[in-house]
Length: 636
Image (cartoon, rainbow, N blue to C red; front, top):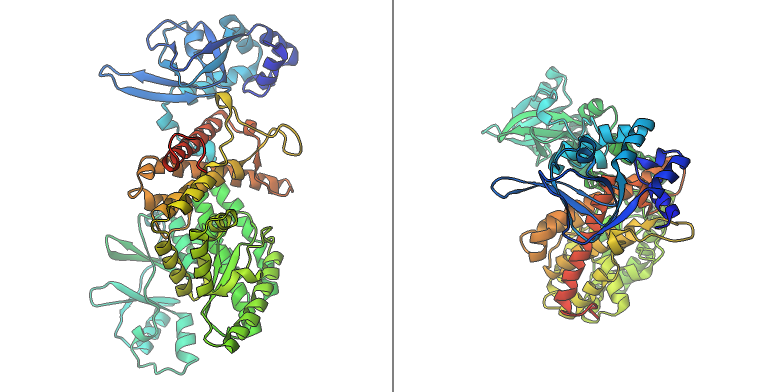
């Protein structure tokens, strides 16, 4: 053993990094190394005490207890940098649990005398073991540790913990749907309320009327106030349940662009919640960002408001939100911005000559955007019937796409390096052209076609006539039937980039350059997982586009996803959170966010989960490999 290699390892491993250099060198000189093959029992429950403190250098172990009836209770999994046998060594007591290697493992062995000297002379070393180590790894089983305090930070979040039944709901004033508009207005005036719930004869809410409805649908249109109030209500009402957390109400308000939601309990009307209630509860809210975007009527105003969207990510991180909650909110806010931009451009250009649908794909299509990513968009428009219609559509959608491209750049969304944007003539076409694209890509899967499929097949409609996108999705699902060759090519894409794990589960990182000692979290971890789930969704011809939604849809339809779907979802959540948290830290430091992560910046538990996530992706890739070309290491 090279003593300097040992020192290099220890100074990056808690709690040794705070030990004086001279002392650390002496400690390193007195360590010995021990190799344990896979499935070696290092410590046996109720067996002899540990003779050494084992510091795992490579590999991993499982810590578990065996019950009298033979049941195995897992306490922990430990990997690189973790220790084994501290309590048994210190107290010279019998081992409290079994410790067995789950792969070939190398440990550095530290004697009891060395451990005692460090405990006496180094407060941080002592604190680590006597507080953090004992509480985290010995006294609690893994299931009770939970990952959230470690992965997401401790949170007293109101938005994500408070149930709607626990907050004061606005008193509900209701009227029957057959009373007159004038009578409804009088009820609102007498009770000094800005909205009124309309119910049917069974007391079930069927609509809502607001001050704005009275202004826009009655006064401005000189409507007869003797008409039934149901003629001006806004059905159907959006509902939440008293058991929902406040986050669910926020998300629905943003999704439906509303300011009130009906709160139900056991199918009965319980109350009403407004965006103001949630903003008061939280102090600030994503709803305020949406409100400000909706209030803008010009491109300049929208561009200015777009700069506040990133603040929502910071807010949600502090609230303790998981990755999918963050991306759900950001997706809805970005969709509102996109719609307002297109509406503003349409006002400038006039009505489009043909119905069209603005679609988004890539991470935006999968509803997985966080910090502003490249533009990935296109236009589908109705097939023109004449040459004149075709020319008019070509000219109009060219101007719309180019104006939108420039507006998105000003809002902080960079140009797509691959030019997958509506501003590129290839990606603004009539529906029949899009159908030909998809058919050709599937039936003639060249490398360019497969690349385009990976990007564009994640499309979803964002603005305009959604039926055009729905017709294209239906055609895609129909064309995929029995297309084994195309799926084979997609499988190749899914396995060609492997997770960054090397021998003994060490992370494979950049060895030099700007990103030395880091790995690309998006390219080596998230992209392979997304590709795997996309492959399975195309195999089963499901319409969902987001990774989480696809996993849920596949859970009972795909054998691999039935077995591994839940684990893949957890891995995706974890990896996505690491990426968001890293990018947020970079922005806080005034740096440009990227996708690179130094694994040594993770705590021991996070490194363990990271390794397990990588192993899961690799295992799923091997299953795909065997399915599409059994017995070989390559699909094509």
